Image 1 (cartoon, rainbow, N blue to C red):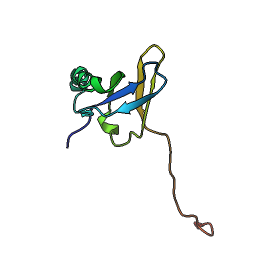
Image 2: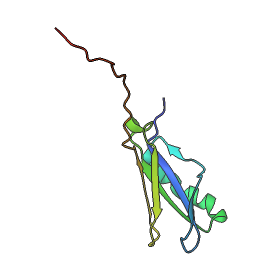
Image 3: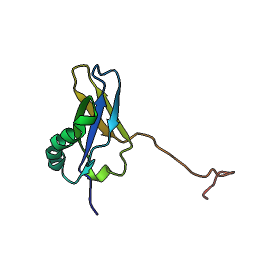
Amino acid sequence: MEHIAALLLVVSCSQDLSGCREVRPPTAVFEAFEDCQSELPNALSTLAPGYPRLFAKCLQVDPALEDDYDQLTWNVLPNGTLDASLSVSKVVVASGTASAKPAYVH
């Protein structure tokens, strides 16, 4: 089974950064963070003709948590920096059955 070590996030924005959205890169997941870093310039040059302003970042993925990540948050800052992270939400779901009468041990 292959593990994901990195995710390539690409975001396109209007010239004034007032509107941004995610863009699907040619390759989005990588088995090594270094592979993502080396692919980043190629992805940007491939996508550049169709988008006014592009920002990209490789996000490191913990293989032990790769199935648990459920939140990708990102923001393009006024200085043109892409801030992004992957996280696991802290939602805890508990279930059980309630007994109609308490159990006593004698």
